[in-house]
Image (tube, rainbow, N blue to C red; front, side):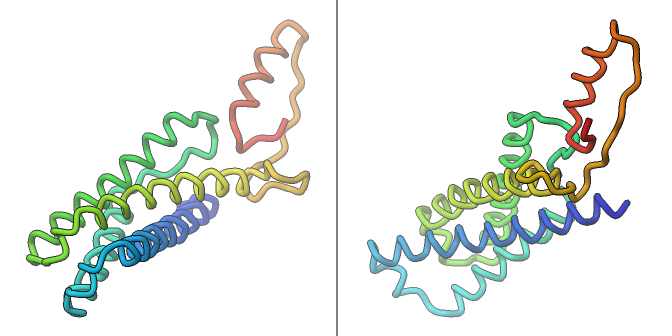
Length: 172
């Protein structure tokens, strides 16, 4: 794995993990404000719930992760990849909850809200990560893009340059 790909992979790992924990924390706080059922659960169930959530995230990210494509500008494909990653994390999490017979799986609102917030925060973080990595926010040098000059004949220049501009790793 080259340096650019490693940098992107670990930044996505960190930001997606942060999105997951932030989504869980916000879901927990919202449900705690509007529901007294959360206090009835033993602390060991909560610890197991959080450990299983982390284990499902790490396992799916390291084994099945679909990275954002830095080279192409295709938001629909990016959203579909984010959705695939998130669904896979929560399906593995649900399987682990069933396997370990965790009683907190009956709180469906916590599960659903965590998934929704995770999807929202992951989408936002990946959008800004891609812009930061390609240097779209400032005139400073991009973190991964390289400058490219083009010499061609006038007949082919317009098509050739438009194809090059679709690649975010190249600044024309």
